[in-house]
Image 1 (tube, rainbow, N blue to C red):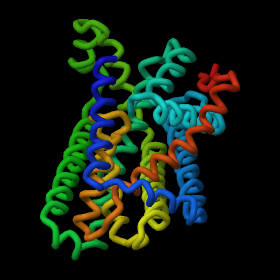
Image 2 (cartoon, one colour; image 1 turned 180 degrees about the horizontal axis):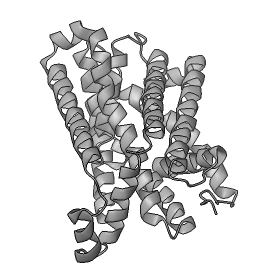
Image 3 (spheres, rainbow, N blue to C red; image 1 turned 180 degrees about the vertical axis):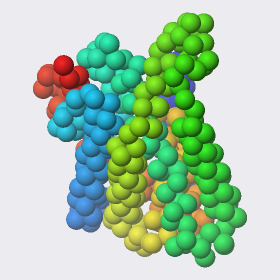
Length: 317
C-alpha cells in the first residue's frame, strides 16, 4: 500500500513538473473534440485491439485443454482493462484476472496464472521487438540520432536474449529432471513452480496456438500505434507524422515500466523526448489522449463487472 502511494505521488509530481515546464498543453487536447472523426477512429482501433487481446488469451487458455469462450474472454479482458485504468496501480487488471482464475480453477491455479503471465509477457515482447521490425523503414531517422540507435540495440539485445533462452529451455526435458525433483521435494511451494514450468513447456508440443497468439500480439500493437497516430492527428497543431509510427512503440515501452501507476508521467516524459528526437512536438499530449481513450473503453469493463455474473473459466469434464 505504501509503495503504491509513493508511486502515485511520483506520478502526480511528474505530471505537475511537465505542466510547469510547458511540456503538457492541456488546450491541445480540445482537438479530440474538434477533430472528433480521428477520436472516433482511435476509440474503434483501441476497442478492436482489446478484443484481439481477448482472442489471444482464449487461444492460450484453450490450448491447455481448458474452456474459455470468446465472449467470456472479452468480458474478462474489459474488466481487467477497467481495473488497470481506474486503480492506482498498473497491475490491477492482472490481479483481477488472477483472482477469478484462482477462484474458478482451484485445482489448476498455477497453470492458469502462468498462462495469464504468459499472455502479459507476449504483449510486452511484441512491443519490445516492434521497433526492430519497423527500423528498416526509418533508417535516416535512426542514423541521425545516436539515442535511437542505442535504444534499438538495447531492444535487439534483450529480445535476442529472450529468444535464445527460450530456444535453450525448449531443448530441456522436464520429465524426471533434477530441477523438477528439487522443486517438488526440497522447496516450499516448489510444486507450484514445477507446475508453472510444465505449463510453459506444454507449448513445446503445441506451437500452433503460441505462434497465433504472438501474431495477434504484433497486430494489436500496430493497432495501438494507430490509436496514438490518430490522436496526434487530432491534437497536434502540425498533424501526425510518419516518424511517429516508429517512435510511438518506444514510448509505449517506457510507459509499461511500473515506476508509477500505469506509467503516468514517466510515459508522457518519454514520449515527448522521443518526439523531439524526431523533430516533432506533442508527444506528452499524444500519450495523455491515449489514456483518455483507454479510460473511455475501460468503462465497458465496469458495465460487465456490475452485471454480477462473473463465471469465466471452466475445465472440460
